[in-house]
Length: 103
Image 1 (cartoon, rainbow, N blue to C red):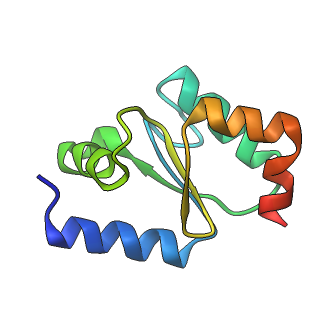
Image 2 (cartoon, rainbow, N blue to C red):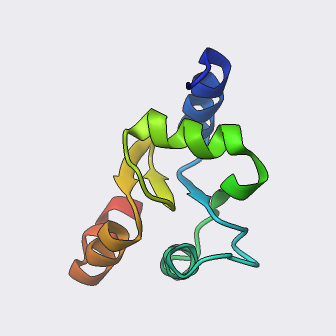
């Protein structure tokens, strides 16, 4: 169950940072291939990325899934909006849509 505090924390985080990724591990040490690929794509734009290691908190891991109603991780937010996971991010990167969103 997503607590009101957790919901507020997530909302504040995605409003305060242009790029937020909820991932397994950290950008320096991703702990799954999807997280690694997502970070690699985001870092290619040379913009600051706010990351959260969802493995450090079961409450956060479940809470972010409830917040977005999206079952998989990583989860990427850009300019306060939920973009999706690795597959969607990859597609947006390849078709140029991501570059437009990050300008």
